[in-house]
Image 1 (cartoon, rainbow, N blue to C red):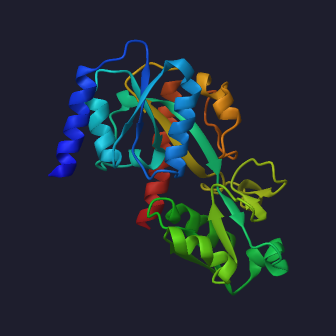
Image 2 (cartoon, one colour):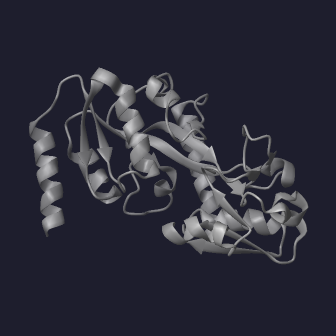
Length: 270
């Protein structure tokens, strides 16, 4: 009951205090996480046009805010939320454009000479790869990995175990959107690591080019190029995230997203 009252009070405040000429940004995820950082980038990119942060606990509450507020409001929105009929699925009218994408990186532990050999990834009969514990993303990742090497065992991890699985030796590789200090052996997309791409490993595979992505959602017309051209974007921490489908029209973007989500969703059903 307290959570419901908190959300209602936030919405009431927003509908009675409209700041002319400014744009609010909704934060709706764990503080300090990737989603949170992306919303910080958006706010900083807005400069003097930024109004205030509207902080809620989750995407369902963020959706309620978008539907109720009279103020111009935007937020970074993970793409997978638009698959199917999930509670956080937004009406297309709130999808301003695609935003950012970071291709998935296959990384290993520095000093592991065996894992550094691409042939080990492709041919070993005893190999384990760790992935983030996402029912949505782990399915296509598993499909790609096992098409590359049917012997690969894929293990899903929660946050803390995922961080320690590679250095502890539980796994030989892990798939991440940002590799940090771990060396990269392959990337499911174009990259600056001089690493082999998914398309080179498995030409034509439906998940050879795949990454963690965000949409820009909101209730206002907004040119996402304003963000890309800002110092906030140039100096962001998550350097592997780049503009996504920015050369397409909004209609083309929405169509491409729907096709991608259906392909990934179907892989999760197999």
